[in-house]
Image (cartoon, rainbow, N blue to C red; front, top):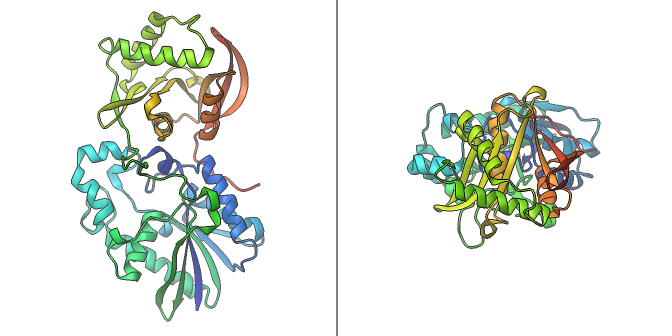
Length: 380
């Protein structure tokens, strides 16, 4: 009999930014790194004979947890363990997809056997792919214990098959949750599903639904200038005031002119984030600054006070990552006031690091940078 520990990857960009990223390659988040550390401790004293993982970066980063205390193992990567291919949905936003085709959006979570979008992988193909991959590993490692890192949808799909239950009845497990299976005689059996006891206080830190039952998915809409100039000036002035303590040095006409220039180059560079039709946030990107060094520049990030603490700021950063990564930029850069502790904490939680100091109009600014190239992260 072969025993499998089937592990969901740590929190990744798609989870945080609220974007479907099936076979789109992305990094794990700062929270994901903490989850990987907790996973390593879980398996510190557990005998493991082999380590296999999806070849996507977020899965291989998670698999590094097993190597922490089992350094003699080799990490083997197999595309058969990848997440479902969501075709034309890859790296769009869940809010956009729900608005564009609410029925397919519903079917994806509730009845994926009937879900169809251009270029997508069928539910039956996913189930067969995962079953065959594990049975192949069972044949290669008879009587052994194998750790396998994969993805949420495909793990749910396999559990649905083995438990004989509808997909909608199988809950999503936390990031790094562990499902235990056995294989014998060409058959798989589910022993336990999605155990996340190793996460402790990290468990459930990233719910998709807020406590009031409202989804945390924002809808991106271009900000129209000059028609919405007052909205832009309000958001920018409140950001300035929070950063510097006063509006000294704030020049609305200058920033409006620059924002119009950015939007003219690419409307996606000046976007509102709406939730239920209400203004939730605003982001401005500079399509020119930093291009010569492979950097994308974030000029403004604003979240309305009533919508803070609901991960809309992360979705704004996710928009920047998506846009600039597609253009081949390798990093994001921005300035943050040295005195703005809340902004600094937010950006560092997103993965930005302080790399320098600049003198701004309203006072000293930290130059902050985040690597956006998908790279395997390993526990130190």
